Length: 313
Picture 1 (tube, helix red, strand yellow):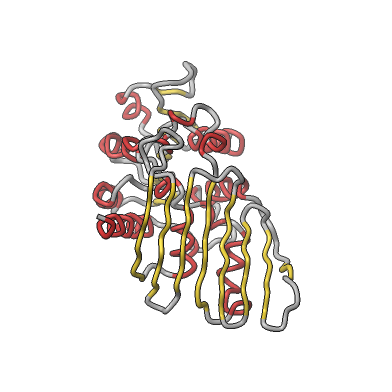
Picture 2 (spheres, rainbow, N blue to C red):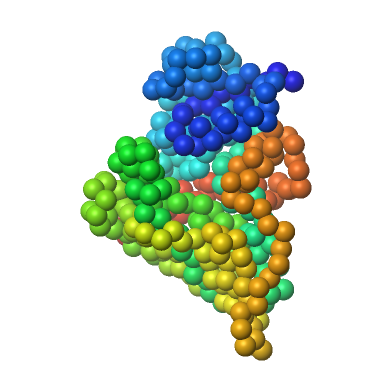
């Protein structure tokens, strides 16, 4: 099948999906819209060229503040992928929701839902932890090491492009919602330390009080010299440590003398991008719709972020 695929934006995520599609779907007619890159058969640089190409599938990999500008050019496109976050704010996300209501296939790129360790935790949480009492989630990485090619010019570092730790690291908010639910009161604290010379927050703490009596905390930052990404979950049966960098699970129970390692079928974060594309291209693999991040899930995340900001003022 010679489907026409357009990638809008050619930053790190655009390049990633370009390589996946080019390698694994060589029969697809693949184009990239970018005003700043190569002059070859893959690249489009004018808005008029998008309408002429008339894509069947669009990947939005451009800054989340710029996406509304393209919607009128892809009115007939039925399959749309949004790299996370869906939008930079709740109100623009509502406009995107209205635009996509009659579309055939919409997906948001929260790829960690395809990570086996998180699927295993979600499925077996009660078995290992029992009734959940609390969790602590942390994700941090020093931005100049993360965005190695001039981090100051990256989306992450710029408010006008929808940057900042909250949106750029919203994977954690997504999987917290996925595992624990999205009914909670929250309080957010965030700062720009000025250490990185950027105009967005680089240090964030969020406290959750869930309707189901679970307390939680989330720490996000662009400041950690040693990369970290983990969640610790406490419950009536024990404590579960989930390390997404080392890709391992450890359990400590009432009767334990030491942490016990839990075995599961592992995959890598890098492999989840390919699985996400396979799902989006209707190769449904072993995931069900309830495991996939929808546009409505993203709306909830952005609404809750909006409410958190409102409370902080």
